[in-house]
Length: 348
Image (cartoon, rainbow, N blue to C red; front, side, top):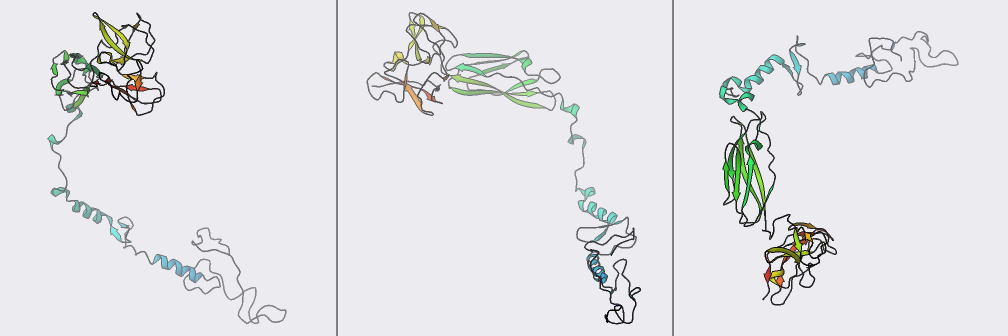
């Protein structure tokens, strides 16, 4: 079967073609003549429907196709008259009058009777009222020593706004005993730390309008050092890079020698990263990573050795009057000791 109507397309599921058995009126085949007995094979008394139509009895069963489409269409409700522009079919297969439906939704929101919040003049802030933005200041971490007076001055220009003016600065918090003075030119901090560890001084920055920002200065407090950090000290004995060292007073001149846990006057104060002969100078290091070790067990705590000058041991001396028990650090690799020299204990 061919469709020669350009305005018609076969319905979904309708497959044209197949065999059609022609049995004109008049009976079956007889002898070798024309099929049937009373009809004409050239003009049978039936026609194929051009489209599936209701009530058709032709051999291709177009009535069945028609009924199938009717079953689908019957599931959708008929639209009201004149509904082309005002009615919509909702998800529950109901035709709704769109203008009325929208009005009902708006009435349900009760916008005119407190359902929404009316805008008042003081309920919003303009960008102009917010004021200039606050620039994140650069506050470099400071290092202080335990029981040693500490002081730092921060220029007020460190705390700036996006319009290049200075931000307002006020103190939020400070460690116990710290003095913080804020004037038009500087922020001055003086303090004598009584506790090791990380400490913070907090500031609140403002822009003289609506914006504010909290910032902080970090101060890392370490053990006090025998000599200033970074100073060069004379070696009084041969030193090997990686050794733990003891700093001692030779008639008013600080000198460096290997540390050993045989007495309290030979405890460890730091370590060195260079070789030195007696009379040469070295720069002691008081914390950080000593990467000149070997054979360490990761995570294990080590102690100053009582047998090897400048060395470490897995345990402090178990016995021996006058010997020193002093933790000096923890291994972070087989060759690296994170130096953290602790207070010492003298064995009785």
